[in-house]
Image 1: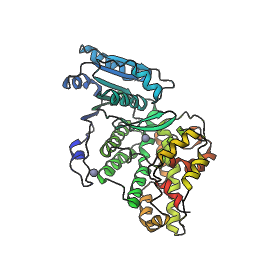
Image 2: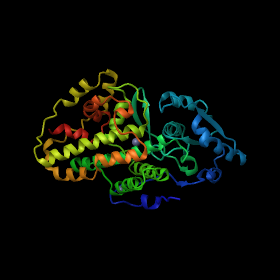
Image 3: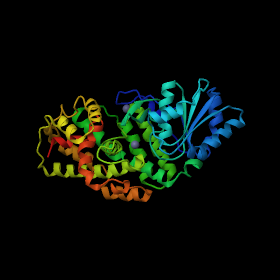
Image 4: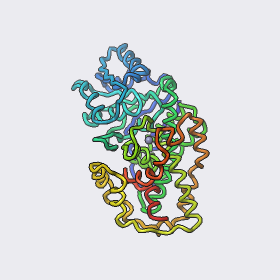
Length: 414
Ligand SMILES: [Zn+2]
Ligand SMILES: [Zn+2]
């Protein structure tokens, strides 16, 4: 069984922030699901509801239901159709109609989508929830934010973290390999996410925490040593989720690579993609890492020059986002313009340290090999994207979030 030292993580920290963890216990072990009746009775929860889709119901929901039935615990089951199920207003409405007043705890049985829907409803109804992941596919299990698509726009909502996680190796080991490979891609994306965080901290003094950075690096170390070991991938994903919980947002887990993934999900320049979150993140990571290395090389050569970005935000919103409603939404998202207070000179002055940070990202070829070993997707074409959309994606994806990344900062130099 892999341990999580909640005390050491939430102890007073040099960063000055109180790292409050909502999750009380994480069980990552074969047979973890058997603990469910005990966890419910310990907390005097008597009326649980399982949220699952038809696949995850078969994978774990049924077993959870019969474990509770054996203890005479009446359980509501909300089984959603897996086809076309998304964490959006439709998915929430589907699940919500079966949640009645008597229910005192929600059980999220599934992967990312089921968790985001559950987390959203738990927050709205003021209910606690327990996470029962059926695949090592995303790092959002213990996160406090729900990634939802609302009115066609990808958004993160403040939501609640699960109080318990029962990660049963006997269950998620049987998940389709594609899901686990996707989880691996999501994890590997932390390399560029951490680089973005460090660079933003360097240039703007944005809050950073070395303990959280270290925890995320630990998650990476756990998986790069064995990209096919799904228990390690689950461990890494849970650590990354805890890192997000410790800072209260996704900064440690999401940077330029995730912005590419969100950008493609918004279908600004492409049609609908039949790709999983971590697949898009993995492909985004490789593009991002390649571009960051190019920037590092330019900085190292010393021939970069600062350029003015006056009026650039509005110009690029106009040229990059044809949909007026989406453009309005992004104009709000990008206020205040994160580049307004930084200049190209700031980047040049910090060239050396920025290059050091970029150098900590493994090479594109090493990461490509790792994703391949995990059975994941590598190229834009692998996930159904026209490779000709690369430059467009690199240019406009930073606008999907206010968060400062090197992909955004590169607009300041040429
Ligand atoms: Zn800290
Ligand atoms: Zn992710």
